[in-house]
Image (cartoon, rainbow, N blue to C red; front, side, top):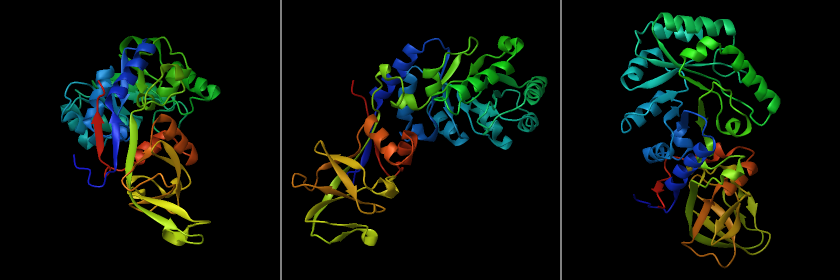
Length: 358
């Protein structure tokens, strides 16, 4: 791999694999562990990441797009893959051919599916229990959809829902109860897979007796309220100092002169910018150079940014833009967002280095 500008992300596959293994060991009363690998594995990218997740113990994969599923299928042939998004029915033949399970989100979509001669297709029905994004909302439509699929020999492998506010016990209990009320004893007897919990709901709520699947998302990558798991960092981001400038009091810096020196100051120019995913709102937060914190100043450029430094920093020094779980969480809080977005925002022009420590 060529690193022509010394800007790259490092993906610790040992930590990723071990995180998955720890989670499954603690929450071991499930049969199906869905590894959520959509959005390039939350910004981690590469099939090496997917393989580490499987090595950790996940026995089903989850994507958002058909494109994501087909990319995985080029190399990984046997593990089942569930697509959460809605696939145009003209492409269902690709799902049949490549063992890709689809989501049924409505009666209308189910009617489209049965017109495509898809008897070998596996489907999971999604119940809208309160998020009001995708899924079937009413008991009547749910029952009609099941009957329609069964009458047309479509294999209903699973039924699931999505918790939208796991930290709120009242909202989540309402969702779980709604899902539970939709599932009859007859369905429990004939449907192979039921899944509700994603990462935080898995930690915060007991599972229903008949539920046998859970979806592991952000917690695989180290982020969870369950600190006893001691999950490890999987994602870090690096760049380098390429020039150091001295500003005198009153000198401005960068586009729009957004930063003005109040005294004689040293400024490091770092070769990473908003085109790499470090959006302009990152100005004011800290990066690490030689194990010390330094603040980003001035307007972040497309390809570069500025850091206020001291005399210990030299041209060529490594700059840690995102250090570990704690630093990513701090950055997310600073930007009023979530760790998911921080990692997903790192663009594909940033090379990824994948490694095992053991």
